[in-house]
Length: 269
Ligand code: 1HE
Image (spheres, rainbow, N blue to C red):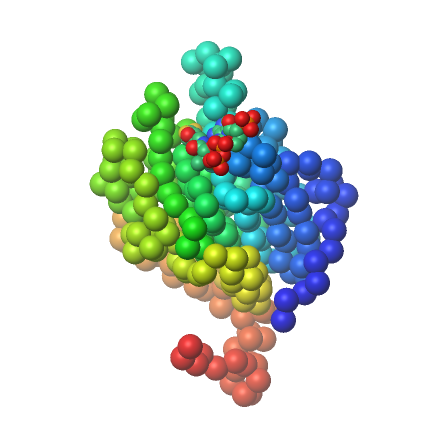
C-alpha cells in the first residue's frame, strides 16, 4: 500500500530546485524548475548531489521525476556562454560526481519519465536503476546541433543501455525516439499511459524497498562491475558477493521464513 506523503527532513526541504517528499521507505525527488523545463543549471546539479548524499536513513528507494510537462530539457544552455575550456571540464566533472552519487549511492533510484528527456536529462535518467516512461516521453541528444558533446556521463552509460550505434544515431541525426521506441530499445523498463508514471514508479520503489538492503546494494554496486570484468574475475567476485549476502542475518531470517511457509511465493503476474 502506498504510504501518505510527508515533508522531507529539513536538510532536504531547503533545496529549492527540488521538491522532496517522504512516502514511508520511498523518497520522492522532483526536479522543480518547470518554467525552464527542468533544465539543469549549476545549482540544480549541486542540489541533486546534496539530496543523494543526505538521503534519510530509513529511505530504501528513491523515485525521481520532473515537475511540469517535461522530465528534463538537459543542460541549462544559458550557462554555457561564460565558461572557458578548463571551466567546462570541471563543470562536466560536477555532473559526473552528482550522477555517480545517484548510480552508486545507497539505494535504488527509479526515474519516472514524461515529455522531453533530452541531452543531460537523458544522461540523468541513465544514471537511475529503473526507468518508467509515460507515453508522452521522448528521447533526444541534440548536443551536435548545439555544438557541444555529452558531459553528464552519457557516453559511458547510454551505450550500455542501447548500444553505441543508437547513441550515434541520436547524436548525428538529431532524431528523437518516442516512448514506444525507447521501450523497445531498452531506454525504459516499463511503459505506461500518461499520468500513470508516478503511481507505477512508487509501486516499483515500494517493491524494491522490501528487498534485503544488502542484496539491493550488490545489484547496484557489484553486478555492473562483474558485468564489465573478465569472466574469471567476475565469477570469483560473484561467489564472494553471494557468500557475503547469504551469510547475513537478514538472508537467514528470510530463508527461514520461506522454509516455514511465511515467505512470499514467486507467482506469475
Ligand atoms: C531552457 C532549456 C535549456 C528550455 N536551457 N533554458 N537541451 C536542449 O537542447 C533542449 C532545449 N529545449 C527545448 O528544446 C524545449 O525547451 C523543450 C522541447 C524541452 C520544451 O519546449 P516548450 O515549448 O515546452 O518550452 P520552451 O518555450 O522552449 O521553454 C520554456 C523556457 O525554458 C524558455 O525560457 P523563457 O525564459 O523564454 O521562458 C526556454 O528558454 C527555457 N529552456 N530548455 C536553458 N536546455 C552535461 S552536458 C549535457 C548537454 C545537453 O544537455 S545538450 C541538450 C540541451
